[in-house]
Image (cartoon, rainbow, N blue to C red; front, side, top):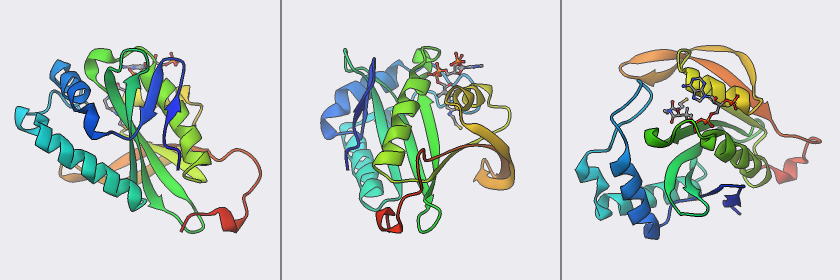
Length: 192
Ligand SMILES: CC(C)(COP(=O)(O)OP(=O)(O)OC[C@H]1O[C@@H](n2cnc3c(N)ncnc32)[C@H](O)[C@@H]1OP(=O)(O)O)[C@@H](O)C(=O)NCCC(=O)NCCS
């Protein structure tokens, strides 16, 4: 699996242990949360090298078990860590279906990074992960996230009621989706 892509400004790839400094520096630079979907700086305890190593191992497990593909976003020129996208596999078999998530450190919002990284991520999703359907399930008032999905030309398919358990309740999500380009692939090509 080739889980790395370079775009004009960015590199996206799984985190490595050697990313610790860049990752911790970026997290420390975060401002306090700017909206309900943002996370401010992580508590210092979670920024230790040991906590980072655990995170990297967990993310690697997610990949080897084909459960979740976390891809960190870096500035290609400076190596700055900018955020991450992820593909959470919902179901393989005859649907090949995943959710796309994205976040950018809040001191770097508004530079087109989410759009650029997610576009490259979709290339990985269809070519490497062999997904058929990628959705972005979005909390309806999250305007920035809706704007990213639109910028990716995902289509709004509707509202999935009481789909996500978060913050102590089941939430409705607006579903944006995109499906694999090109002709249907033979079943042989499907994963698991
Ligand atoms: C959503 C998020 C990833 C956007 O990151 P970003 O790098 O600032 O987004 P981009 O600069 O790539 O913007 C992409 C598009 O969204 C628009 N946009 C970005 N933030 C916006 C906002 N607050 N309000 C309206 N539009 C916004 C941009 O103008 C751009 O549109 P365009 O291509 O038509 O110009 C970022 O705000 C974030 O991390 N939020 C917290 C986590 C989160 O909400 N994740 C999504 C969970 S579903």
